Length: 186
Image 1 (cartoon, rainbow, N blue to C red):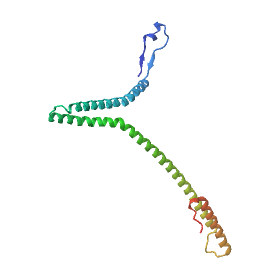
Image 2: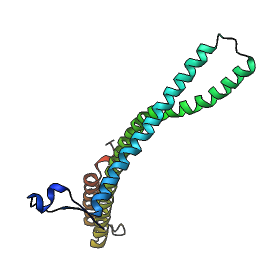
Image 3: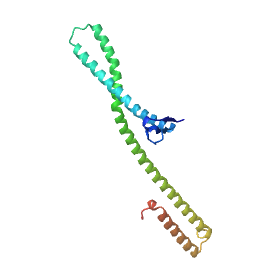
């Protein structure tokens, strides 16, 4: 749905050849959204300020009447009304000042979440690398076993020497793939 808006200056009789402007539904929606976003932030702020001003006015009047000859019953009514207004005023003050406090908390929480995500990403990549290294080491052990280098049932000197060389190769592979897991030499 669109609406057609014209003004007298845009009519052909006036000598102006500009066509009338057409306002589409999307333009109205954008305008309404802009107006609502401004009023949703502005109206509660103005209400909070008016409530705090009203609270200050009532408090000033109570102080001026504190030394006058008011009966205890009337004073009890004033204090009862003041307590209700005080709760509303504290809510308004909380609205005004609490937004900044909560914004700071939210910023700190977002920073903490970003740091936690970075740490988790690093841990995942380290775990993936460790898993790949472990699988490569396992494949090396399997390959040596299938090649016959790790059969203790043979007692020939050549088999013992081959086993020693293969175990040294496995140790070298393990030290290369898992440098943080090296044992100190004794």
